[in-house]
Length: 297
Image (cartoon, rainbow, N blue to C red; front, side):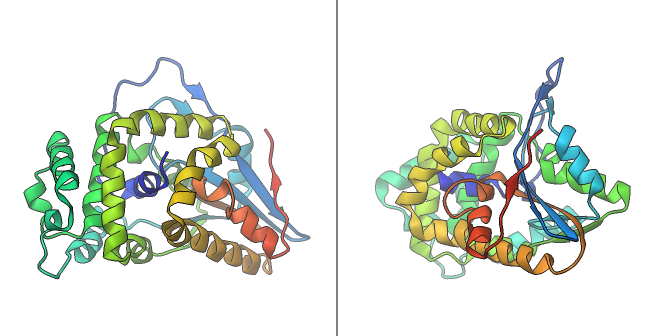
């Protein structure tokens, strides 16, 4: 999947739950990838997640479940507010462009026509987005098709893990705040926001197949294929890759290095794209002199 659409899909947790398709009669067993960092008194598991899923995928089992059960705390990218209106309010406070330029006026003629058609095809009036920054429209266009295809945020791995942690009385922490995560998009230069929106519109026809492929690689625990599916866009958009992936991976690796100074067992769950390919969290840890080892089923 193109990196831009993948990053937008990663924030689908910020929107409403889609209507589900009927679940398969028998669950599909998944074996997603997981890594471990360990010293004498500290163990940190790194688990790659998918933020939205369809019903009928049995992944919270085996080695993943055992690692989670043995952990003292769960660490996610963000901890969502219990009140979804709080998340919506934060997004809206950052979504308005504020410079008086209509969103569609930022696009050239061919791109404008394609954008308006895409919005209408997904039952979103483009006129209602004219005061918004392009990143917000790109986000909305990344969410809507997946919802229509039956992907649900409430089945995403983070939701399942957090619910299990709360039930077990585990501590739940976050690597980033909600505001920080939204700002990765909201503070992009306007030219890159337009690029993000145009790339999202251009990729809509292939979204179903590409996201399904991404999910298959995740289910099979195949980070190499996952990385390969992202390489072209990472190379084509190096500035965005730095902002949305590489720098964050480096920050998280530093967090892990610091956390190794304290004892305990931690289960860290972040988007699978952050644990795949060049510049991954594992690569960043290696640069810090910390080895990671893949945990096999």
